Image (cartoon, rainbow, N blue to C red; front, side, top):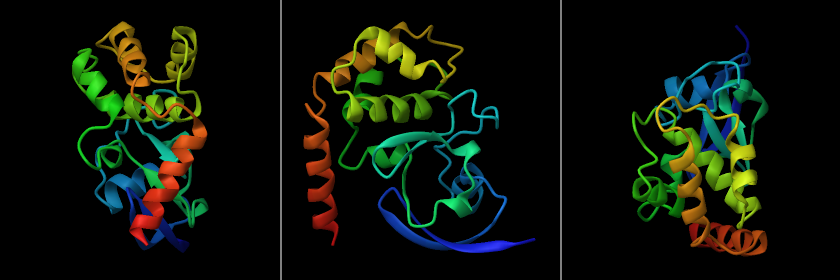
Length: 174
C-alpha cells in the first residue's frame, strides 16, 4: 500500500501525517484524526453530510477528495467553526429549530457558512440552490432556510471583510 506524507491544518491545528494515497479526506478526518463531527452519509458526494470548508472558502464533500491531494491545505469542520462559542449559522440553526436528528447538521452548517462567506445576503432561492446537495430527512428544509437567512443578518457584509478577519486571525496565531 502506497502512502504519502502530508501536512493538513484542521480546525487551526497543523498536522503532519502519513496517509494511504487512496484514502479519502473523510476517512482521514474521522478514522485517523478523530474529527467525527464530519459524518459519513453516502460515500458518493450526494448527501453532503461530510462537507468541510477548504482554505476558509469553498465547501467540499470530503468523501470525494483524496487526503493525499490536499497537502498544505486548510480544512475546517463544523466543530472548527465554533472557536469562541457558536458561529452565527450554528446559533441560527438552534434558534430556528433547524436541527432534529442532527446527522445532516454538520454538513448543512458547513455548507451554509461557506455560502454566507461568498454571498452574505443570499435570496431564499440561492440558499435552496446551494443546499440542494445536502440531504435532510427530518426538517423539511424550511427551518434550515430560515436559519441561513437569520445567520446572514449577523455575518460579515462582504467577502473582503471575511478575508480581513481570516488574515487578522492568522496573524494572531503566528
